[in-house]
Image: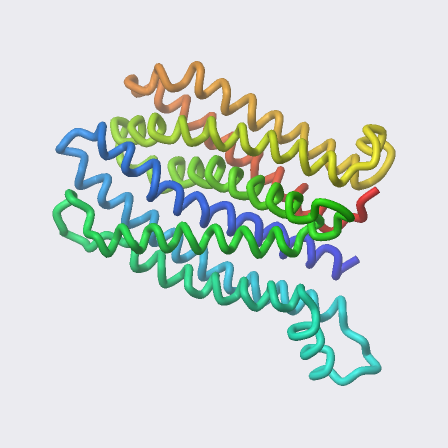
Length: 309
Protein backbone atom coordinates (compact mmCIF):
# COMPACT_ATOMS: atom_id res chain seq x y z
CA UNK A 1 0.00 0.00 0.00
CA UNK A 2 2.82 2.39 0.89
CA UNK A 3 4.54 1.67 -2.41
CA UNK A 4 1.30 2.27 -4.32
CA UNK A 5 0.80 5.65 -2.62
CA UNK A 6 4.42 6.64 -3.28
CA UNK A 7 4.13 5.58 -6.92
CA UNK A 8 0.91 7.53 -7.42
CA UNK A 9 2.24 10.68 -5.76
CA UNK A 10 5.42 10.47 -7.81
CA UNK A 11 3.39 10.15 -11.02
CA UNK A 12 1.19 13.08 -9.97
CA UNK A 13 4.25 15.24 -9.32
CA UNK A 14 5.62 14.22 -12.71
CA UNK A 15 2.41 15.19 -14.49
CA UNK A 16 2.23 18.50 -12.61
CA UNK A 17 5.82 19.33 -13.47
CA UNK A 18 5.48 18.44 -17.14
CA UNK A 19 2.22 20.40 -17.52
CA UNK A 20 3.76 23.47 -15.89
CA UNK A 21 6.97 23.20 -17.92
CA UNK A 22 4.97 22.94 -21.14
CA UNK A 23 2.89 25.89 -19.96
CA UNK A 24 6.00 28.02 -19.43
CA UNK A 25 7.27 27.15 -22.91
CA UNK A 26 3.87 27.82 -24.52
CA UNK A 27 3.58 31.13 -22.66
CA UNK A 28 6.95 32.34 -23.93
CA UNK A 29 6.32 31.24 -27.51
CA UNK A 30 2.64 32.15 -27.96
CA UNK A 31 1.11 34.15 -25.11
CA UNK A 32 3.93 36.64 -24.55
CA UNK A 33 4.40 37.62 -28.24
CA UNK A 34 0.64 38.02 -28.62
CA UNK A 35 0.43 40.18 -25.50
CA UNK A 36 3.43 42.22 -26.67
CA UNK A 37 1.59 43.23 -29.85
CA UNK A 38 -1.25 44.82 -27.87
CA UNK A 39 0.74 46.09 -24.90
CA UNK A 40 1.07 49.82 -24.39
CA UNK A 41 4.65 51.18 -24.51
CA UNK A 42 4.53 51.92 -20.80
CA UNK A 43 3.81 48.26 -19.99
CA UNK A 44 6.57 46.73 -22.10
CA UNK A 45 9.06 46.81 -19.24
CA UNK A 46 6.53 45.02 -17.02
CA UNK A 47 6.06 42.35 -19.67
CA UNK A 48 9.83 41.87 -19.90
CA UNK A 49 9.90 41.33 -16.13
CA UNK A 50 7.14 38.73 -16.41
CA UNK A 51 9.12 37.00 -19.17
CA UNK A 52 12.12 36.75 -16.85
CA UNK A 53 9.94 35.33 -14.06
CA UNK A 54 8.30 32.77 -16.36
CA UNK A 55 11.68 31.55 -17.59
CA UNK A 56 12.85 31.30 -13.99
CA UNK A 57 9.69 29.36 -13.10
CA UNK A 58 10.38 26.98 -15.97
CA UNK A 59 13.94 26.42 -14.76
CA UNK A 60 12.79 25.76 -11.18
CA UNK A 61 10.10 23.39 -12.44
CA UNK A 62 12.64 21.48 -14.53
CA UNK A 63 15.00 21.31 -11.54
CA UNK A 64 12.21 19.83 -9.40
CA UNK A 65 11.50 17.37 -12.20
CA UNK A 66 15.09 16.13 -11.86
CA UNK A 67 14.25 15.05 -8.31
CA UNK A 68 10.95 13.53 -9.45
CA UNK A 69 12.82 11.66 -12.18
CA UNK A 70 15.24 10.19 -9.63
CA UNK A 71 12.30 9.21 -7.41
CA UNK A 72 10.61 7.58 -10.40
CA UNK A 73 13.64 5.41 -11.07
CA UNK A 74 13.92 4.50 -7.40
CA UNK A 75 10.26 3.48 -7.16
CA UNK A 76 10.56 1.42 -10.33
CA UNK A 77 13.63 -0.34 -9.00
CA UNK A 78 11.91 -1.14 -5.70
CA UNK A 79 8.93 -2.55 -7.61
CA UNK A 80 11.15 -4.55 -9.94
CA UNK A 81 13.66 -5.70 -7.29
CA UNK A 82 14.34 -9.43 -6.91
CA UNK A 83 15.80 -10.02 -3.41
CA UNK A 84 17.59 -13.15 -4.64
CA UNK A 85 19.54 -11.27 -7.31
CA UNK A 86 22.42 -8.83 -6.67
CA UNK A 87 21.31 -5.20 -6.73
CA UNK A 88 23.79 -4.26 -9.46
CA UNK A 89 22.36 -6.97 -11.70
CA UNK A 90 18.82 -5.71 -11.22
CA UNK A 91 19.88 -2.12 -11.94
CA UNK A 92 21.78 -3.16 -15.06
CA UNK A 93 18.86 -5.21 -16.37
CA UNK A 94 16.34 -2.44 -15.65
CA UNK A 95 18.40 0.27 -17.35
CA UNK A 96 20.00 -1.51 -20.27
CA UNK A 97 17.79 -4.50 -21.10
CA UNK A 98 14.31 -3.00 -20.75
CA UNK A 99 12.77 -0.34 -22.97
CA UNK A 100 11.54 1.43 -19.83
CA UNK A 101 15.13 1.97 -18.73
CA UNK A 102 16.11 3.47 -22.07
CA UNK A 103 13.18 5.87 -21.93
CA UNK A 104 13.93 6.75 -18.29
CA UNK A 105 17.56 7.60 -19.04
CA UNK A 106 16.51 9.70 -22.01
CA UNK A 107 13.98 11.48 -19.84
CA UNK A 108 16.70 12.39 -17.35
CA UNK A 109 18.89 13.86 -20.09
CA UNK A 110 15.95 15.92 -21.40
CA UNK A 111 15.07 17.31 -17.95
CA UNK A 112 18.66 18.29 -17.21
CA UNK A 113 18.95 20.09 -20.56
CA UNK A 114 15.59 21.75 -19.93
CA UNK A 115 16.91 23.46 -16.80
CA UNK A 116 19.71 25.04 -18.83
CA UNK A 117 17.39 25.97 -21.71
CA UNK A 118 14.96 27.85 -19.48
CA UNK A 119 17.81 29.67 -17.77
CA UNK A 120 19.20 30.68 -21.18
CA UNK A 121 15.73 31.90 -22.21
CA UNK A 122 15.63 34.55 -19.48
CA UNK A 123 15.78 38.02 -21.04
CA UNK A 124 18.75 39.97 -19.64
CA UNK A 125 17.78 42.42 -16.90
CA UNK A 126 17.70 46.04 -17.94
CA UNK A 127 17.86 45.32 -21.68
CA UNK A 128 15.59 47.16 -24.07
CA UNK A 129 12.35 45.24 -24.45
CA UNK A 130 12.32 45.23 -28.25
CA UNK A 131 13.51 43.45 -30.18
CA UNK A 132 13.97 40.21 -28.27
CA UNK A 133 17.61 39.08 -28.70
CA UNK A 134 18.15 36.22 -31.16
CA UNK A 135 19.86 34.02 -28.59
CA UNK A 136 16.86 34.33 -26.29
CA UNK A 137 14.52 33.37 -29.13
CA UNK A 138 16.63 30.32 -29.91
CA UNK A 139 16.63 29.35 -26.23
CA UNK A 140 12.86 29.61 -26.18
CA UNK A 141 12.54 27.31 -29.16
CA UNK A 142 15.01 24.91 -27.56
CA UNK A 143 13.04 24.81 -24.31
CA UNK A 144 9.85 24.14 -26.29
CA UNK A 145 11.53 21.34 -28.22
CA UNK A 146 12.79 19.77 -25.01
CA UNK A 147 9.28 19.97 -23.54
CA UNK A 148 8.03 18.06 -26.59
CA UNK A 149 10.70 15.44 -25.99
CA UNK A 150 9.75 15.25 -22.32
CA UNK A 151 6.10 14.65 -23.21
CA UNK A 152 7.27 11.94 -25.60
CA UNK A 153 9.14 10.09 -22.85
CA UNK A 154 5.98 9.98 -20.75
CA UNK A 155 3.91 8.66 -23.63
CA UNK A 156 6.47 5.94 -24.34
CA UNK A 157 6.07 4.64 -20.79
CA UNK A 158 2.28 4.97 -20.58
CA UNK A 159 -0.65 2.59 -21.02
CA UNK A 160 -0.54 3.46 -24.73
CA UNK A 161 2.55 1.27 -25.08
CA UNK A 162 0.51 -1.74 -24.01
CA UNK A 163 -2.14 -1.69 -26.74
CA UNK A 164 -2.22 -4.66 -29.08
CA UNK A 165 -2.67 -2.75 -32.34
CA UNK A 166 -1.95 0.74 -33.70
CA UNK A 167 0.53 1.32 -30.89
CA UNK A 168 2.21 4.25 -32.59
CA UNK A 169 -1.13 6.00 -33.00
CA UNK A 170 -2.03 5.39 -29.36
CA UNK A 171 1.33 6.75 -28.17
CA UNK A 172 0.93 9.80 -30.39
CA UNK A 173 -2.59 10.39 -29.07
CA UNK A 174 -1.32 10.11 -25.51
CA UNK A 175 1.44 12.63 -26.22
CA UNK A 176 -0.89 15.12 -27.91
CA UNK A 177 -3.33 14.74 -25.01
CA UNK A 178 -0.66 15.64 -22.44
CA UNK A 179 0.76 18.41 -24.61
CA UNK A 180 -2.69 19.96 -25.00
CA UNK A 181 -3.20 19.84 -21.23
CA UNK A 182 0.11 21.64 -20.74
CA UNK A 183 -0.54 24.37 -23.29
CA UNK A 184 -4.00 24.99 -21.82
CA UNK A 185 -3.75 24.50 -18.07
CA UNK A 186 0.00 25.07 -17.80
CA UNK A 187 -0.16 28.41 -19.62
CA UNK A 188 -3.20 29.47 -17.60
CA UNK A 189 -1.38 28.56 -14.39
CA UNK A 190 1.51 30.79 -15.45
CA UNK A 191 -0.88 33.69 -16.12
CA UNK A 192 -2.73 33.43 -12.80
CA UNK A 193 0.48 33.08 -10.76
CA UNK A 194 3.36 35.00 -12.35
CA UNK A 195 1.45 37.06 -14.89
CA UNK A 196 -1.28 38.30 -12.55
CA UNK A 197 1.06 40.73 -10.77
CA UNK A 198 1.80 42.78 -13.91
CA UNK A 199 -1.36 44.88 -13.62
CA UNK A 200 -4.81 44.65 -15.18
CA UNK A 201 -3.95 45.89 -18.73
CA UNK A 202 -1.12 43.38 -19.09
CA UNK A 203 -3.19 40.61 -17.51
CA UNK A 204 -5.94 41.33 -20.04
CA UNK A 205 -3.41 41.26 -22.89
CA UNK A 206 -2.11 37.87 -21.75
CA UNK A 207 -5.58 36.35 -21.42
CA UNK A 208 -6.67 37.58 -24.84
CA UNK A 209 -3.50 36.20 -26.39
CA UNK A 210 -4.04 32.92 -24.52
CA UNK A 211 -7.65 32.46 -25.63
CA UNK A 212 -7.00 31.09 -29.19
CA UNK A 213 -4.32 28.78 -27.81
CA UNK A 214 -6.79 27.48 -25.23
CA UNK A 215 -9.46 26.79 -27.86
CA UNK A 216 -7.08 24.74 -30.01
CA UNK A 217 -5.71 22.91 -26.95
CA UNK A 218 -9.17 22.01 -25.63
CA UNK A 219 -10.21 20.66 -29.04
CA UNK A 220 -7.08 18.49 -29.21
CA UNK A 221 -7.53 17.39 -25.59
CA UNK A 222 -11.10 16.24 -26.16
CA UNK A 223 -10.35 14.47 -29.44
CA UNK A 224 -7.34 12.61 -28.07
CA UNK A 225 -9.16 11.81 -24.84
CA UNK A 226 -11.97 10.11 -26.72
CA UNK A 227 -9.47 8.19 -28.86
CA UNK A 228 -7.53 6.98 -25.81
CA UNK A 229 -10.71 5.95 -23.97
CA UNK A 230 -11.76 3.94 -27.03
CA UNK A 231 -8.36 2.25 -26.98
CA UNK A 232 -8.24 1.45 -23.27
CA UNK A 233 -11.86 0.36 -22.69
CA UNK A 234 -13.49 -2.80 -24.00
CA UNK A 235 -17.09 -1.60 -23.60
CA UNK A 236 -19.01 1.45 -22.44
CA UNK A 237 -20.04 -0.47 -19.32
CA UNK A 238 -16.39 -0.47 -18.23
CA UNK A 239 -16.94 3.14 -17.15
CA UNK A 240 -18.94 1.99 -14.12
CA UNK A 241 -18.21 -1.71 -13.62
CA UNK A 242 -14.48 -1.62 -12.86
CA UNK A 243 -12.03 0.43 -10.81
CA UNK A 244 -10.25 1.76 -13.89
CA UNK A 245 -13.53 2.82 -15.51
CA UNK A 246 -14.87 4.47 -12.37
CA UNK A 247 -11.68 6.47 -11.90
CA UNK A 248 -11.83 7.42 -15.58
CA UNK A 249 -15.45 8.52 -15.15
CA UNK A 250 -14.45 10.68 -12.20
CA UNK A 251 -11.68 12.21 -14.27
CA UNK A 252 -14.07 12.96 -17.13
CA UNK A 253 -16.56 14.63 -14.76
CA UNK A 254 -13.85 16.74 -13.13
CA UNK A 255 -12.45 17.67 -16.54
CA UNK A 256 -15.98 18.69 -17.54
CA UNK A 257 -16.05 21.14 -14.63
CA UNK A 258 -12.76 22.63 -15.84
CA UNK A 259 -14.12 22.91 -19.37
CA UNK A 260 -17.30 24.64 -18.20
CA UNK A 261 -15.31 27.11 -16.10
CA UNK A 262 -13.07 27.82 -19.07
CA UNK A 263 -16.03 28.24 -21.40
CA UNK A 264 -17.72 30.65 -19.00
CA UNK A 265 -14.54 32.70 -18.69
CA UNK A 266 -14.19 32.79 -22.46
CA UNK A 267 -17.76 33.89 -23.18
CA UNK A 268 -18.42 36.14 -20.19
CA UNK A 269 -15.00 37.00 -18.83
CA UNK A 270 -12.97 38.22 -21.81
CA UNK A 271 -15.36 41.09 -22.67
CA UNK A 272 -15.13 42.37 -19.07
CA UNK A 273 -11.33 42.47 -18.80
CA UNK A 274 -11.23 46.24 -19.31
CA UNK A 275 -12.85 46.80 -15.90
CA UNK A 276 -11.07 46.07 -12.63
CA UNK A 277 -14.04 44.15 -11.20
CA UNK A 278 -14.42 42.07 -14.35
CA UNK A 279 -10.71 41.25 -14.46
CA UNK A 280 -10.80 40.18 -10.81
CA UNK A 281 -13.69 37.79 -11.50
CA UNK A 282 -11.89 36.32 -14.51
CA UNK A 283 -8.77 35.78 -12.41
CA UNK A 284 -10.73 34.01 -9.68
CA UNK A 285 -12.48 31.73 -12.15
CA UNK A 286 -9.20 30.96 -13.89
CA UNK A 287 -7.63 30.08 -10.53
CA UNK A 288 -10.54 27.73 -9.84
CA UNK A 289 -10.04 26.22 -13.30
CA UNK A 290 -6.38 25.48 -12.56
CA UNK A 291 -7.15 24.11 -9.06
CA UNK A 292 -9.68 21.58 -10.37
CA UNK A 293 -7.27 20.62 -13.16
CA UNK A 294 -4.68 19.73 -10.50
CA UNK A 295 -7.23 17.24 -9.15
CA UNK A 296 -7.76 15.87 -12.66
CA UNK A 297 -4.03 15.20 -12.88
CA UNK A 298 -4.20 13.26 -9.61
CA UNK A 299 -6.92 11.05 -11.07
CA UNK A 300 -4.74 10.62 -14.16
CA UNK A 301 -1.86 9.48 -11.95
CA UNK A 302 -4.16 6.90 -10.33
CA UNK A 303 -5.26 5.69 -13.76
CA UNK A 304 -1.65 5.17 -14.87
CA UNK A 305 -1.17 2.64 -12.09
CA UNK A 306 -4.55 0.95 -12.42
CA UNK A 307 -5.18 -2.23 -14.37
CA UNK A 308 -7.08 -1.68 -17.60
CA UNK A 309 -10.32 -3.66 -18.19
